[in-house]
Length: 180
Image: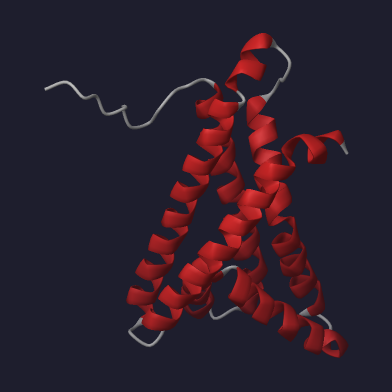
């Protein structure tokens, strides 16, 4: 419970970021869906990478804000904090993917699986192009849930990476100086 209390603002911001990127990814997916499989895949990869960049920069800022607490020893394990914060924000979408995966095996639960599939397409729009490309290439529906879950885990790992670098005041891209 302490974890949720300490990181509630980060979890909330990651959830809002996820929903915003879902809209962005869904628009990109709908714009490229009929343009061909490779175009749809490229758009899906672009939206997923863009989502990871936004998560990285957001978590870097939170890590930089928490740097004094890590330096003083009041907080520990920045990587774990960053990863589980992002994973908590992604938990609802992971749960929906798991429910889809389980219900897709039972004919009586096909309605639940269909609803979960629609929810995943709408709320994980930045991974939908990738998922459909892989699903069509393998001609198998079993890859739908693992792709969405893997996407959430990768985003969480990127968030942890950003948070750790922010807590150590390290940058991937050097800071711009004003010298002429």
